[in-house]
Length: 191
Image 1 (tube, rainbow, N blue to C red):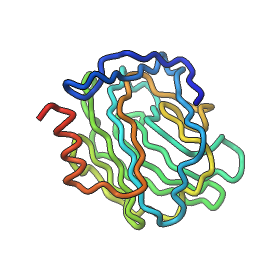
Image 2: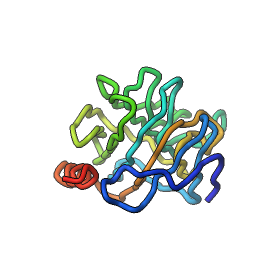
Image 3: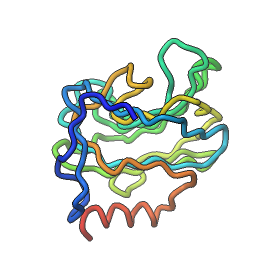
C-alpha cells in the first residue's frame, strides 16, 4: 500500500466506533491499494465509503480504479464529487468510447458525514446517499481495469485528489441489498 499525504487518527464516521478516519490533506493525499478489483463486463459489485469533504473546489474522487491518464487500455470506474458537489459514479472504457454515469440531482451538505454506496448488478448501477437511492442508470460493459484501487484520488494517484475525511471504505464482490445499505447507515448513525 502506498500512502501519500494522509493523516490517520481523526474522529471517524461511525458513532461509538473506536476506529478512526483518514484525512486527505490539501488535495495532495491518496492511498494506493495494490492489486486490482476486477469487475469485468456484467460482474456484480458494490463500493461503499463514508465521506466528509472539507470543500468542493474541483472534481474530488472518493475512490477509483481507472488507470493512468492517456495510456491504453484505460478502463475502470470511479466514485466522486463533481464540481457542483453532486455525487457521481462512472464506469468507463475510454479506448472504446464507452462512458456510463449515474449522479445525484443535488449535493449533500458539507460539514457532515455522508454514507456513499454504489451497487452494480450487471445491468444497472445505483447510487445511494445516506441510504436513499439518488440515481440508477445502465451500467454498460466497462470497468475491466487491472489497475490498483485508489482511495482519495483517481488515475493511480496521478490525477486529481480529494480533500477532507474518508472512513470505512469497502468493496464487495456482490450487490448489497437496499436493506443492508440502510442497516449500515443506521449503525453508522448510532440507531
